[in-house]
Amino acid sequence: MTRLRRLLVGLCLLGLGAWSAGLGWFMLDARRPAAIPPHADGIVALTGGQGRIEQSLALLAQGYGDRLLISGVDRHATLGDFLRRQPPPVPLALWTHTTLGHQAASTLGNADETATWVHEYGMKSVIVVTAGYHIRRAMLEIARTIPDVRLYGYPIRSPALRHPLHPGTIRLMVVEYDKWLLACLDMARLTRPLHGLLNHADTRPIAPMG
Image (cartoon, rainbow, N blue to C red; front, side, top):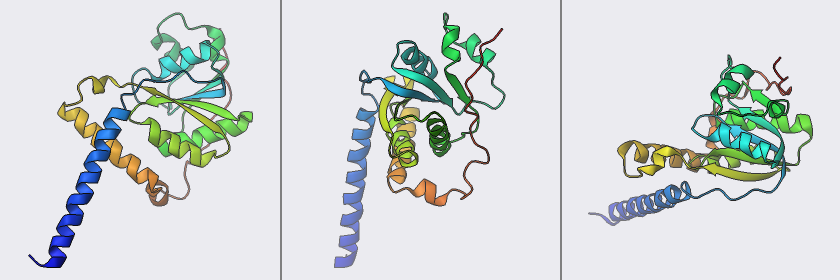
């Protein structure tokens, strides 16, 4: 084996070792419990996993934030849909402080939707609620769109992490870890279409039913 080949093999092994160590740290970090956040102007829940909406509503009800954005909602979802799905009782007054964001279809879309909502209400601080394996990438992308706004992460422990050695869980962690690494390099924004979201989020608060 030539010296150059040995060097390349050594670098590959070193890179693989660093990647594997990082993945191990990432999996442990995804399981950390959420800390009690300070009060913030707003709370944003990124849809896509269990417990995110329920916990964001609980934070709103407990006074940790003044307004709530649920980002990445299905275009056909309505207030009635959410009221029927949430465990009772959900105080109706909470929904007058809640916005459904229908435009986001990705983490970058969540970030743009959050920025539109934050600027609409002149917010200076936001609590971000999403899965523990998603929180770092979400915080990174949102911070890029609203760099002057204080962000507080509130990770939700995914049920999938109860079985960390399950092949499906490992596959999920590898994908999310690689996405986070690419986000650190800002690759997603460099490669996505320049026009961004086709439409802005509807940032009007939801009117109470009846």
